[in-house]
Length: 249
Image (cartoon, rainbow, N blue to C red; front, side, top):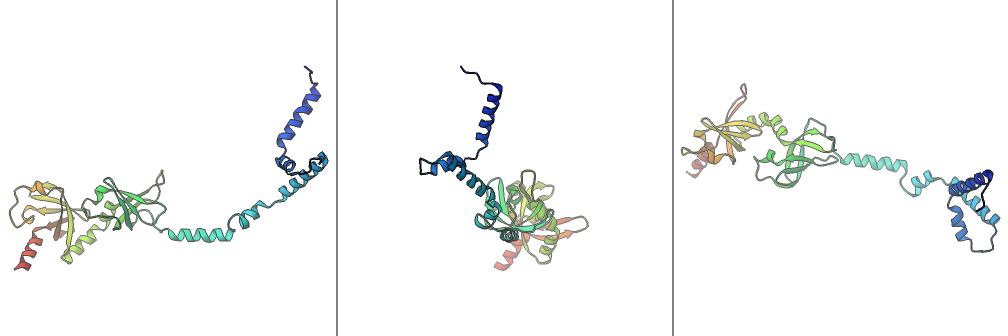
């Protein structure tokens, strides 16, 4: 084996490094040279010219004009995209559209970057809820740690509940309520997110012995009394039955 001197080894390493740093342009040029008799000087001259052309190529201009959009076009597209998004703010009530319903979740679109998820239990007062319905939701967070939009239908109802319940009383409006549980002398009913009291005498025209059969049901009621000082609401299902009987007469 022939041993190389220190100087020869350094020259050999420098040549290898130079070859590694050499652009692949040389190989490509050699492959495209049709004349097999081309000398090394001619090939090196072609490589040098290719390097100059490569270094002088304006990539920014290519991306802006040929390979993409100009800056003004980008700004215009960005502005149009932002206009398609709603201007909802956190801690505000807004209207959204139901896009899907499952046993556990209701997905609502409020026009933000992503849809929000609301627990199905918050809509149990409305068993007729369907895709495409408009619902009010409270924006708790536009984006949590995982980038999820956090919404609450229950909070939205609670914030507007007193206005609604007073309007229902003034207009003799029929409202839907979810019977939550039995209590002394009657039932507790969820109306607009407010816990209203349904006296036992106001359930039906007939005396009711077993209140438990109504628990978990959604029924129609009339608001018959409101105590704004103590935040008490009294509802009646019997009033609806009486009204129907009067119409039949």
